[in-house]
Image (cartoon, rainbow, N blue to C red; front, side, top):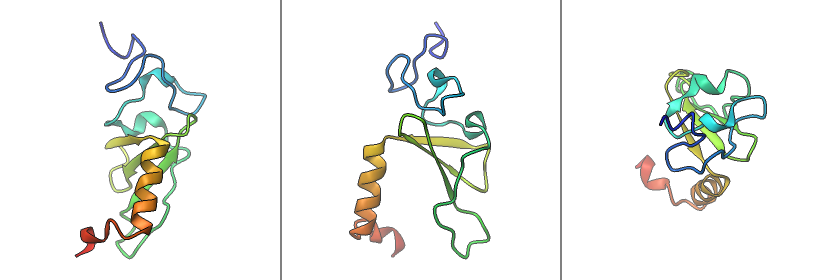
Amino acid sequence: MDRHRAGTRPGGKPGASSRPESRDDSRIYNGMPARELGSEGWHKPWSGGNGGNCLEAMKLADGRVAVRQSADPDGPALIYTHGEIDAFIQGAKAGDADFLLS
C-alpha cells in the first residue's frame, strides 16, 4: 500500500498534520520536494553577502518548520519539529555551532 494514500510518512504517525491547513496534511515528509509545500510562506530568516543564496524556512500549521535552499526552491525540504528548531537556535546562540565556521 502506498504510504501517502495510507496517511503516513517516513518517521511519522498516520494522519499527522504539518502543512498549512489548506493543504493535504498526510503528504508531508522529510526530504519531500519543497515545491509541494507551495510558494507562499517561505521566508529568509537572514541573508548574507552570498548573492542571495541562503536558507528559507516556512512555519507549518502544526508548528513544525520546513527548510529549503533558496537557490534550489524545487529541491528537498527538510522538516523539523518545533523542539528541533528550538534546540538548534539555542545551541547556535550559545556558540555550539561555531565549529562550522572554522
